[in-house]
Length: 282
Image 1 (cartoon, rainbow, N blue to C red):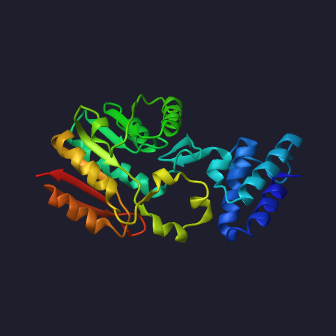
Image 2: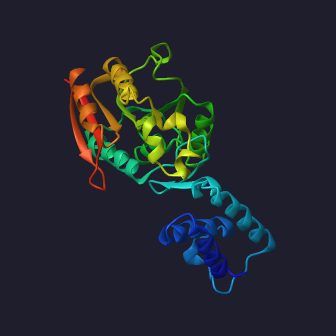
Image 3: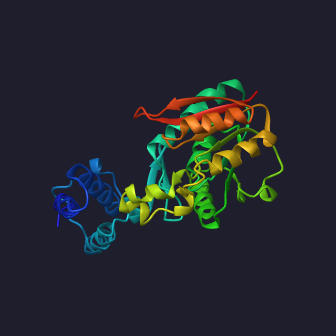
């Protein structure tokens, strides 16, 4: 089977689960993983898959038919021009989160040469690694409650040659809070109310870690309030707090921060949704 035929075969099989454009995009990522080369560099019409590659294709197709995200099938996801390792212990990095990193770099890096930065809920490590890679002088920490997630983050930091200090702790437990203070605290915390799980795609609810996705319906700001309380005592003077938010709760996050003594502003993402907040202590 040629690479072109394999791509077309995958696309046809996946159109039962996804629209054709998404099926083609998934098929392209699978073929790149199987061949080990970007699709643009392969002569797809003449190159044949080996027996081992064809067997890999069929194995991956079985997983994809179970709504397993292609990033978990291939074990790779792109974020801020970096190829990161991912598995179902961590969320798949989203393009919107790249905008949060960009905002931090644009706002904070020109102000100071060095900064101590903490990412809370580090997951794959995409946020702290991207910041460190683009701000080498920064002293960057990543915190997560999950040991499995931190193992993935550490692997990614090693691959990207970005020294990060990793902390295993729950931000919901003040007794576990790190003692030191920071110039910048950033978080993309769990923020989806449990009741919204019924509206999400199966490739999210069946595979991505619920620990990193959902909050109780009765307390959608659970992590924002906890992190804001932490920031009140662990931000250096002049420090900043950055959040990615549920678009339906940005106004509530702003209000909660203001009630805790912060001055807060919001920012829209590439799709025009209110998704990011920056806050500083008055």
